[in-house]
Length: 103
Image (cartoon, rainbow, N blue to C red):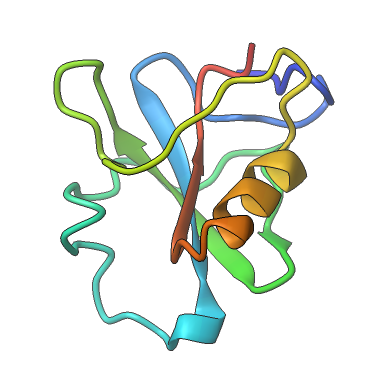
């Protein structure tokens, strides 16, 4: 799904979230933790940003409004970009940043 702030890039999709991992926390052997509880469903697709600073290696995870993959802070922005999302995660000292729905 196109990012609201940069339509040529992808920001997840309906019921899918693209999650980036801050590699400065160390390289996880699994993306499953108390913050992320899911298994990737498909590899990144064309248009996805491969990294923003230390946030790298995006994977697509199933997500829903009743069972969120990322269970901490969230925000929405009609002009969302991956960079905006990563800046929010970095400010909150979060290991994971996730974008979905695009607009």
